[in-house]
Image 1 (tube, rainbow, N blue to C red):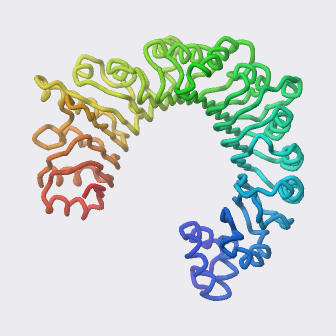
Image 2: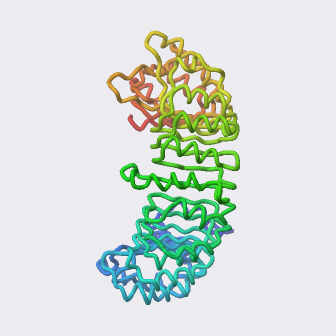
Image 3: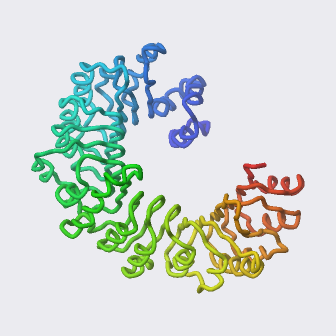
Length: 482
């Protein structure tokens, strides 16, 4: 009879909960454990930035012997990059490379292409970081020629000369996910090479802090073939708003020309104006499912387009913090979005809830908002808010954000004497975030653990006795401020 932990099917489940130190200990238990845990130990390898300074070479024989187990590899291209001789990383699927400070140009231009030629065909996920403008053309050519089965490409904090951009687009031509973050693309006078690249498999595009090439040009001349694109993220840094605003403005003007937006249903747009939001939402061809618009000018115009185009009926996730969304708009969203599952909004006033219609978002699982009440009608408004919240029977997370202004108005009180008993229907609630110190007695705590049976965390300052806090701990409810 075999001991349970030696069963091959259990090893992967056990190993995923162990760090490298624990796995190394498991190797010393017995020969059978050693053979079972070796693939997990060498599955994810992160080489130190300067291996020559910590005598990393002493570990290289083991790493070389088990290179066939490496699934994910992360390293810096520098003077002592020790893995150029690896030619049998048959399990390698994820590669993260960045340029180090102590760079050997010869190593980057000759040994890296050889390494890619031997192992690049296995890769599905490639991350390139801090690739400078002077990166040799041979490196980009080798990347494009060797990494032919990629599904995801990410380029961070880098710069590309005009001659290397065609290699980048060729490298990305068959990927499903493309991420460009803080990248400077130097102007390419010859756009014919870009226009011939197909992006027929591209499903998600993150365009964050990219400068140097017109976004409108890329979306109308480079990406028209991306007919399967479903998710688009764009971020324009506010400090560069004057310089970068023409990109999104030009994009809005060029929207009808291409098929870039044919299947886009998820948007994350940061740092753009309300008018630009309205233009983009107006040109979507399919119903909107998710919109992340935090730290932007999203406001009345964009809300009007969402109402006009019927996006309220289909949207499932809305993140609208630090925008120009007002309380009445939040109330309208809660009334008009029947499929909404996640909502993060700036502020909701009790008087708007009181005047508004019933909430129609019966599928809501996460609500993050600042709820404020008027002093003179606090009890009545709280009762109304509790009544509306009680209808959200699938709610798992209720995050009531704080107002740090000196003139902050009252918010919800979760004591039994204040009517919290109405919320007994929220049986799926797992996390409650309180905006202000909350006074709780034994009756209040006992009510919570009796009715919110899935509650596991209360974030916020609790003004309660030690006995009350002990009741929470006994029911596995954590309070980080305890």
